[in-house]
Amino acid sequence: MLPANRSLRSSARINQIPLHALILAFASLLFRGNCVFAQVPATSNQTIPVDQVQPGMQGYAYTIFAGDQVEKFDLEVIGVMPNFLGPKQSIILVQLKGPKVEHTGVVAGMSGSPVYIDGKLAGALSLKLGIFTKEPIAGVTPIADVLAGGGITGPISGNSPQRPVSNGLASEFSQRAGLQGGAELHSIETPLVFSGFQTSAIQKFSSQLDGMGFVAAQGGTTPARPDDAKLAPGDMAGMVLVQGDVSINSACTVTAIRGDRVFLCGHPFLNLGDVQLPMARSRVLTTLSSDLASTKIVNVGGPIGTITGDHLTAVTGKLGASPAMIPLELTTKSALGEKLIRVQIVDHPKLTPLLVALTAFNGLTQNVVYGEGTTLKLHAEIRMKGHSPVEIENTFAPGDTLNPDGMPVALSLMSVVMRLFTNQFEAVNIENIAVHVESVPGRQSYSIESAWLEKGEAAPGETLRLRVLVRPYRGAARIEETTIKVPDQVMRGTTLRVMVSDADWMNRASRGFAGGLGPGSPAGLDPLIALINRERKNDRVYVGLFVPSPTMLWEDKELPNVPLSQLNAIDGRPAPGTVQILRESLASEANVAMSGPVTGIISLNLPVR
Image 1 (cartoon, one colour):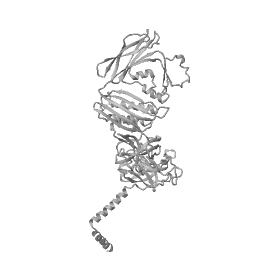
Image 2 (spheres, helix red, strand yellow):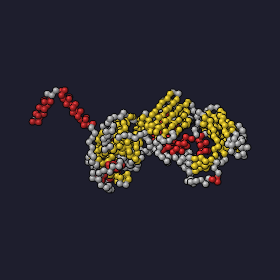
Image 3 (tube, helix red, strand yellow):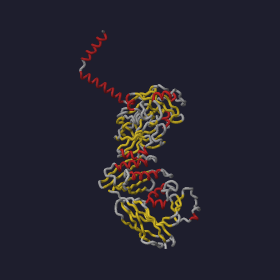
């Protein structure tokens, strides 16, 4: 009876408290509870080496499922897989537990989530098992390997050399995960967040993006915040590939922070090694659950530093200033108006060419002034520090295939930027890329059907008129005229060749098949730039007069009319494969400008009397 009386007296005292006081007290408790829940979880700087991890050990990990709230979920150790990533590079196999992870499975963007066992940092969540698995089973990169990936080899509590672990892993793993043919551990996908990009534009470059471990996801950008750089384990950050009017960013979870050093992902982004790429904060909107591939929907925040390493066991960064990027301006013009898109692109030889093409194609095709079935006139300028600018000028007519008309424009830019970055002589420092594309209604293209000279023979030094019959696409044929001059020094009785062709055929006839790449390429960046700028435009009819004497092409040099007896008497004796010998030499050249690309070739003989 005493407990009951105490309970009644307590109830009586509560009934005497004013209602508004109860409400305030409840609100205060609720507020304090929310504040505690919103705080970043306490983490330990102590670590546990992989050789102390045993099956059945309980642990937990941190990640973000929505908003800025770092959440904790439980896990249980299944076992250790020795030498999984390589010699002496083991993986801890764990099963994730809790309603959220059991609903979503292992999520793209979760890689790097810090894993704690016995309250000590054990590693980074980095691998997932299979695709349609029913249990959330993941692999953890040991923390020693994560830190070593960033060049940190500081003291690890209780660290000792790794040794093979025999703990019945194979049988237990197969029973719990149902491992059968086709199931494998592979890196958790990294969301590649596209903001301002059309899905169709991304799909056109899917072949280049496939195999890189990306999950293409559309997201947005958020304004920079003062607390962007205040990272904690479980937060998200990643690489900035493109920023500006449109953006492309990767997103991973932060594993650990040591001073100003940040460790992400637990696996490589592209395994690029030591890099200098911008790092930005990522903020999660929500997590999309999918039986095929759950992923985080992410907005990209402000810049917070530099990604300095992309290695097998971690992506590493440094808080502070971000490296410079390459400005790109794309101007599109048509009868409907003009539009300007400004972006900045990372400076990296393996990434920049693809990103230039993808950004230019998206900016061109998503523009309201762009339309299929129009002729596109491209003019671009690439400015580099310490060198002359590269000029790109070409015209692209629509085709009859389902390939978008803007794709050749993007691939043309990609080809030139790749040639600059892959030169063998010096690093390229691109200061600016300016691209101007004008859209002209209709398909303006031409084919060469016939050509004839005003005379059937010529004298040395004589100038002859040449007529060319060209036919526009679905139009009436018309005649274009130009002149060619026979060289004064041509011997009488010689037969010359007059070639009327498009730019591609004239390039091949005068420069062979090297085209400035591979053997016979220019011996320096300046000669390469000069060669690119000399390449003929595709919207012209070219007329070349060839004389029957050999031309030697040695790197970027053209040596016409070389006597055969002197081909093997060259100072320096060029290496095999660096020299091409053409049977003819280009003596003179003329061209006729057209309003669209030209195709075709006609060859005429011209005797010299």
